[in-house]
Length: 268
Image (tube, rainbow, N blue to C red):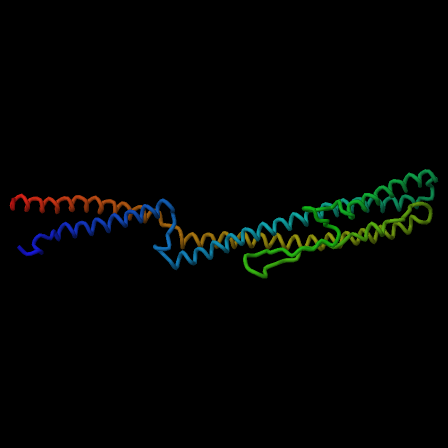
C-alpha cells in the first residue's frame, strides 16, 4: 500500500481551517477585551497613535502649568487689590487732613490711621504676598512651558512693587505735609494700577492659551481614538463569525477522523 493512501487529507484540511478560525477567534476576543488594536493588527497605526498620545499627555500637563500660572496671577491681583484699597483710604486721609477746621488731636488721629495703613502695605510688599513660597510682588518672573513641544513658553511676570513701601515711608498727614503725602499716594496708586493692568493682560493671554490647549487636546485624543480603538460592533460580528467557524471546524474534524476509523475497521 502506498504511503499516500493512509494520509487523511480531509482531516488535515479540516484541522487547518479549525486552527485558523480558533486563532482569529482569539484575536477578536483580545481586541474586544482591550478595546484597542495591537501592533500586530496595525503596526503603522500604533506608531502614529503613540505619538499622538504623547502629544495629548504633554498638552494636558502644559494646560496644568497654565492653570497654575493663572492662579499665581490671580493671587497677585488679590493682594494688589488690598494695596489699592489701602492707598485709596490713605488718599482720603491726606485730603481730610487738609481741612483747616481740624484740631491738632484730629490730625494726630488721622495720621495714626495713615501710618497703620502704610505699615500694612509694607508687610504685603515685603513678603506676605506669596504663591507656593515665592514673593509675587518683588519682581516675580517665571518662564512657563505652555505646549507639548520645545520652545512653547510664556514668561509670567508681575511688576515689582518692592519700592512702594520705601516711597510711603516717612510720609505724614499733619500740617503742610498732607499735601506732599497726597501727591505721593496718587503716584503710588498709578503704579499699582499699572502693575494690575499688566498682570490682567497676561492673565487674559493665559486664559486664551488654556482654552486653546483644551481644544487641541480634545481633538488629538479624538483623532488617536479613531486610529487605535477597535470598532466594537464590527469586531463583535467577526468574533461571532469565527466562533461559528471554529465550532463547525470541530464538528467536521470529528467526522473526518470517523472516516479514518471506519477504514481501519474494514481493514481489521
